[in-house]
Length: 215
Image (cartoon, rainbow, N blue to C red; front, side, top):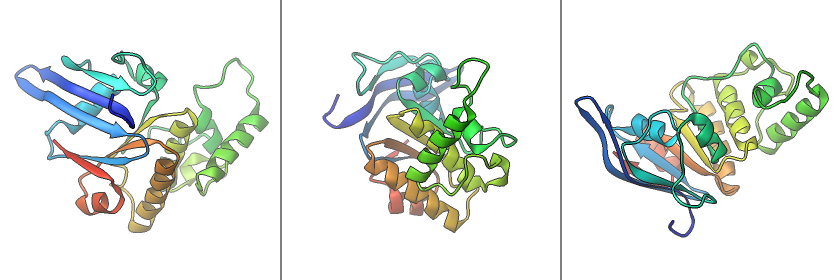
């Protein structure tokens, strides 16, 4: 891998019946950078992300991740998560009827008994460290869309992700909410997280991104 890289995709190919979705695509993400991934609809952005996160099997090429010897084997979203790759989608995939803390730890607690005090305390520390204006015990559905996305990001960060994929995260946000999200992205960049920012908004790319890849 290149020095300073946290992710390298080399020669990625993906075919569907009658369609060549990706052909020999190269993509490098450096540690602590915000990297925009852009392109017209149908250019292959979503396909590339789904190959990286194990939703689609690739038909050629290799994926290398910092700390993993040899090509990474990613056959499922769980494999991607185990390798340090997390995705926050445009559509919120958390549970609005549960609390912020429950959403941050859902699927990560073992056994029938949950230490609620410990969970709320841990969630509170993460929210405070990232400057997210939400209470651990607050029902997620009462938060704005922007804060819900930030909670999803906080969950990913707490799972020690190396690569954070933000798929069209600003589409439903107003300008003030976009700026809050950008502030969180800059904080994560300073912590060394590599961020892939999938978007159609060129002005936002110029404002927050370090590099751009266009498909």
